[in-house]
Amino acid sequence: MRALALLMLFASGAAAQSETTFQSTVPLVLAPTTVTDSKGRYIDGLTAEDLILYDNNVPQRIQLDWEISAISLVVAVQTSTNSTPVIDKLGRTGILLSNLLAGGAGETAMLSFDKEVKVRQDFTRDPDPLTHSLRMLRPGAADAHTLDAVEEGLRLLEKRPPSQRRVLLVIGEKRDAGSQAKLEEVARHVERVNATIYWLTYSPFLQPFTAKPRTMEDLKPEAERIKKRQCLQCPDPDDRLAPDQRPTNLLEGLAALGKLHQPDLADLFAKVTGGRTLNFLKKNALEEAIQLAGEEAHRQYLVTFQPTRGEPDQFHALRVEVRNRPELKAKTREGYWN
Figure 1 (cartoon, rainbow, N blue to C red):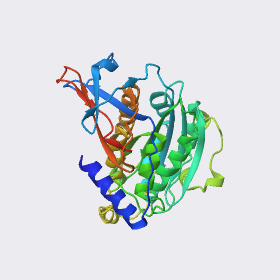
Figure 2: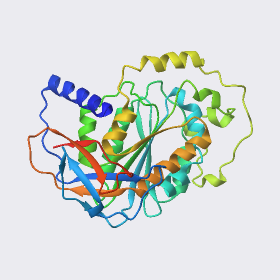
Figure 3: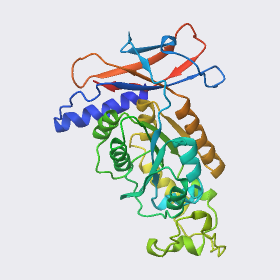
Figure 4: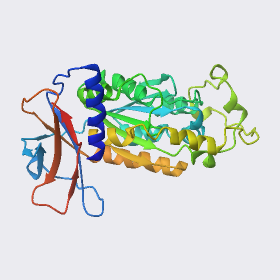
């Protein structure tokens, strides 16, 4: 609940400064729910009668979506100057993102962000153009406008059909540096979109130790990069360069320390939306994190309920229990604004 309290503190503080009044925006509340046993194994086959959802400690009448909803997935990748090792690791993960997370009937879009947010790939069910777009990423400016990227991802998702389940996957640092978007505004937007946010994060201080040797292709400007659509045909040049002359890890570490006064966006948004935060360092850990996020997204119970009318701009805390099964753990979003 600490993450939730922080989000409410930042939201209420900013709202008081701007004297903004927020109206009720969620006529039907979606509460993605994960149920596991004591060993962390997913529990399937439960019904609406097996689950008890509490809204501010009051049990609610719930429904479960019995149909497997196709997922509309937006992948937001940080491409600031300290993201080079992560960008290198992402080159061949397009098929994992499309097949494991979005699923066969789903669709995936991709954007990148440093001080500018760019949509690199519109929604597609084909993993090849997504893989190509990932391989074409290059590091850009120093700052990472993370909140701006989340806001743009939500704009893309809210245009998808309402029958699609909406998921945003952020691959980047936990904290923001210079966004124009405000935390409370993005928090309300994610509420309206009913999106679930997963966050794959890393230490910018440690990542350079995992970097692979650079090539001439890595140094080319965007206009001169390989433009073939089928990335299986894209050559992997072996013209290795000398070790990259990036700023020292000490400087990157100091820059990371300077962001510590900013809220932990990964923890805040994952908990409030019912998603998950996963950390990685090496490429195999990144691929495992994608698999874990995909497995959870497809094993969740999609619980919905109609909230009662109340005072506007009031936060409602949610929790779920499994009826007569205290040994099982149910996890859902921490709450919503009425």
